[in-house]
Length: 439
Figure 1 (cartoon, rainbow, N blue to C red):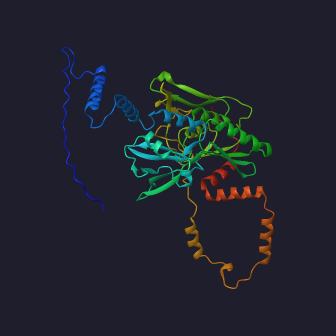
Figure 2: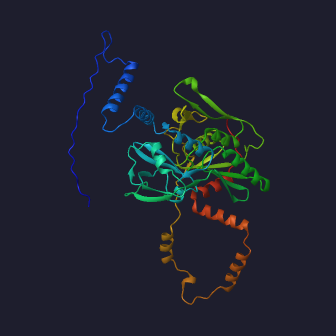
Figure 3: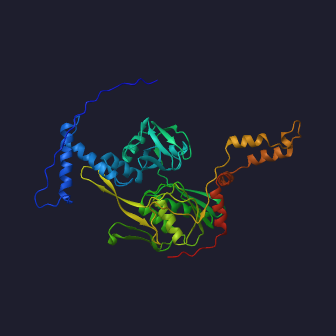
């Protein structure tokens, strides 16, 4: 039981008097220098009277951080270390737990766990609220400070206090940090000629990985249809979203960005390439964890009538951040524009709505299966039932002749059985005609 300790606080009130405006100046006039003068006065006062020693440089740097973080959840000041980490996460492996996070109304929200990372394996999900990091509250904690606390050397652990969506009580989840893989594309044959392509994030190598794996598969088996899985993809590099989209399109508009100046619009178009897959039927899977670059791809394929979208509405992160390096090695990440799909839809705070809205249904747990088995009786459950010796012999022979190909087929069947969205996507892509895209 905690013991209460009473502190007597003596507060000294300091009054700052600002000289009246000179004669001829309109009272309350928005003078561009007045705000700077007020800022300088506050910095001087804090430096002089704050209870601890603090330098002017520290105050100004913290002011810059606060100024950027108050703009929106994605603008931020990047220290030299933060700037390097941002570059590493786009181009190489980095150490951490593998989640994309955002800040919303002072709360730290999981946008998406990256597949096959410690966070993904620990069960973190889109929409989870991170309430504490190693026992420290995340309320009003800056996004970059939170990222810095969550990341760390490989092999060390971090404990997150997580409130799952719909849960009444938070839980502590201890996660060992690891090396976050940079492999961003995975493929799996669902049936002969039908290929699942899962893109987990968009880094420097994503398009090359995708095209290489499509070419490798098509050498052995003609591609009849593709299920493009963008679920729980937190996004990444804009140029990779454009080139991935272009893999399934010919030329034409893919996305455009525009800032507050109407003249700032910039279009990103596809271009014809020999290995483009422009006539293979595609079904794309999306959900609330599909964000940013993933939404660009989904929006382009939907607007151009190139793919059927199945799943759930996407995250709605449609803003463009420009990263600017500063002379001392630090930098700023500033929201400078919004993304728009080819038809002119803004993704920001709206997201991409699928053509078929199908929520994911989790497969039965072991507990559910056990409960079902308790009330399900068959011949084999009866005492002294006769054994089927021929069936046992057949099973033994089957095990002896299992090949790698059969193992992969079984893996695909298991995945489809557990994933209702993937199951529907496969059925739909098998029935789709070759769609001629709309430019």
